[in-house]
Image (tube, rainbow over all chains, first blue to last red; front, side, top):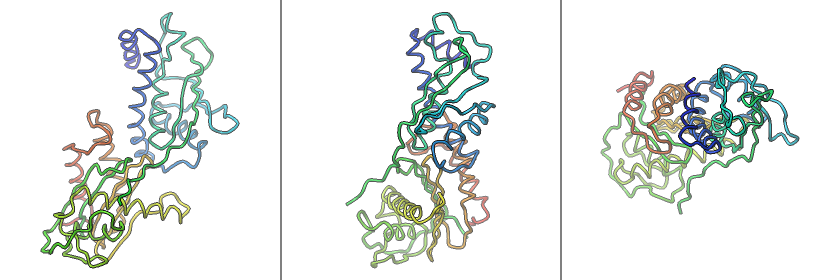
Length: 161
Length: 182
């Protein structure tokens, strides 16, 4: 419910749904960079071997820990760099109805996209994340598409001569 | 058995936290400190040995770093980071498991290292007799760092840690470790 009021306030402030989407994503990003530390501290996991393992970990451990349910990982692309998360129940969107104009444009749970992006960036993976479909918009399922852009390099201290 | 000091490095290779306990004053004479450009290992051994309070342990090449006077904290941190970084890469290339490098020991001190997947690095120097502290470091991370820094909305990332609560909790925790003695 608090999440709903946050979104409602943003809609009122910005009045432009694409701007709201961007803000939600940015908020999610800030949450994500800190959430990953909490996650790593609680689960004691080291680095995942590959992207598939990352996806499984996000779904089974991450989501389970923070939101209480585990979305299904499906729709792997041919090169193994994209996958979808199907959220059967979205605790953020319980009891929520979107107003008329919003349904087409507002990505209600966009904050989740930001969280994933922020968290994965801290473990040196750059990803893009967006909602393909959303039950709030009247579609059948809520589907989140995650695409790996590239692996980031670790920072090296500057050489002194 | 004592614990000498602790460094925390963030993922941008900067030292965001340093604290020391039991730093005994050195009677040492200072010869030109091992500043900039020296191979990290020799210099860092000297720096850390001086930092760990053991009187004037000569490093390779007959250079002795003075007690914190000639080497600023920033330089010392950079040297420590360099040692740790190089060793870690070396061990990673040699070993199969992901966390290969956890500690090394000289006859003067022992350095324990813990790294998270998010790039945060914890380095602790103790005397050689202390057992493996990687569990303790993990606990410092999960129970102190995460609680007071990550969960603190006012603590900015990538900047030195100035949080008093963090410092106090850390001091209490370390003082209660079995290896610590005044």
